[in-house]
Amino acid sequence: MSATRNRSEPKVESEAMESGPAKPQRGIQALESTGMLLEALVAAGRPLPLNVLAREAGMAAAKAHPHLVSLQRAGLLSRDENGNFEAGALSLDLGLMALQRLSPTGEAEPEILALAQATGLSAAMAVLGPVGPTVVRLEEAMRPQHVSLRIGTVLSLVNTAIGRTFAAFLPGAVLDGLLAQEPVRMAGLGAEGRAAKAPADYSARLSAIREQQFDTALSNPVPGIDTIAVPVFDHTGEVTLVLALMGSTGSFETALDAAPLQTLRAAAHRLSWRFGAVGRVDEASA
Image 1 (cartoon, helix red, strand yellow):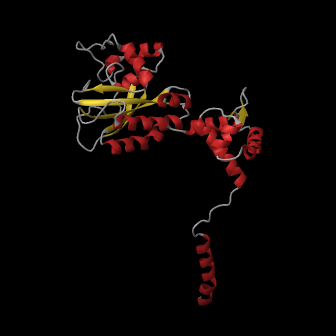
Image 2 (cartoon, one colour):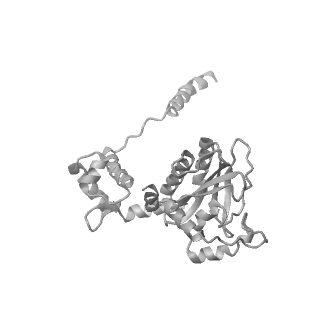
Image 3 (cartoon, helix red, strand yellow):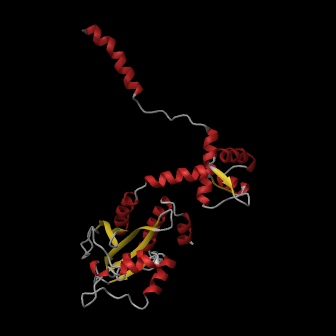
């Protein structure tokens, strides 16, 4: 038995060595250089000529050219009518495959947690459900606040910042149909228990939201609670989520250049980029 143990010990030691820290895998340096060109094109977010693309990737045009030729042959890049390099058919197919695997709410979950921690405010995420804007995630602030939102709350398209942010980007016919269901939504009822009528400046308010890509609700519809909301776009240009921060009135700034709204817009920017909304992201950042 002793001899058996002695014979097995080297084997155990060998297995331990094999299961030790993994060594860095050897790659192909030429392909890594090619990847730098693709990263530079993605960072630019628009077609680029050879010299500019090479410069952005940190290499000489003469070195970049053969890489770009191979990328064209593989279908990862193509050239537009001006000769600029842009995403090819294979890149588009890969991008669509990645987008199809994304879960917007799952991708946004870490952002909601980070927003609440960074700002000390309550953070919420809403989607457009069958009946209207619906809260699907709420991370409450550490300090108690009288926020009437709960998971599953359906919000008014007229009287809430989250609802108006969705409404601003809906086709007119769709919005008209949803407005007819206002009585079932939080803050959707008027004094007589009927659907709250949109104010005269409602269309102008929605236009401003489309232009600025955020909305606020100050101590209304919940007295003492302020809300700021921003849209998150997907690759089709539609609003897939709305993110919001909420806190006691006067406890935080709601201006465009204030830290809370800038933090919220940065989170929406990151998510929109992940969801493929390059054009919308560029517009919002301008």
